[in-house]
Length: 109
Image (cartoon, rainbow, N blue to C red):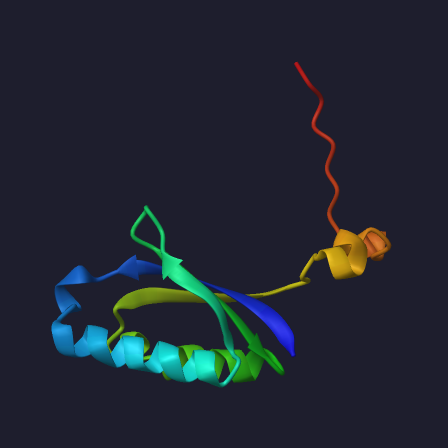
């Protein structure tokens, strides 16, 4: 499975209620049990992130849109980005193709 970062922003707090929160948490359990949810949590800027595993971009978008939060547009903006996971097992991408990485040198002042 491939790995995706989901950035949720544009929170509409007035939509929150106990029923919505409980439905969202239940859905997170379903994603976790199915092996899709690796990490999730709110950020200090009122956004949130999820790291999901799925076969392709369409599949992960479906997972995001099936979240009860998406059903009521609790987070108005939902951006999905595929990431290349860097781990000790792949030597943190040391041998990864340089054309796939943007390396920018910033001169020091």
